[in-house]
Image 1 (tube, rainbow, N blue to C red):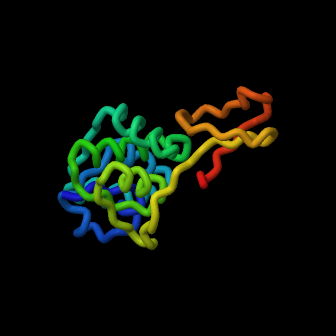
Image 2: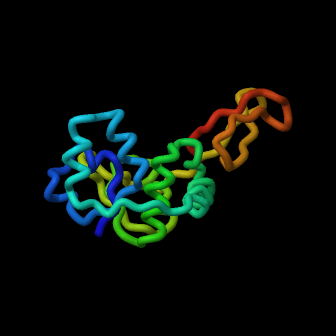
Length: 153
């Protein structure tokens, strides 16, 4: 039973969704993105679940992807961690966290990411670098300038 993100719910044929695992919060996201698709997806026999997101948040913080993931993304990631199943997603940040955690993933309709990325906060003033550990923007502890999320070198 693979875990599917919202891209799969939107693009896969209904028959392919039967027996897949998804988060309840994805229904609200689907309602916002494609109201006509909701009734079809609800009738597809999907295993709707909820899991605590603490492990997913910790895993995303380690790679610096936490700021790039929505609450729905974190819930889908939590399902993947808890089930150990393959995650079907086009979201590169989800793929990045899965790769770092040794979890399997597959792309839905785009190409899968090819390498592991590490994100960091870089000061716009003094160029200091620190790991990304939360979603909150912050200023540099050294010079007070704003810090931006950049891919680590």
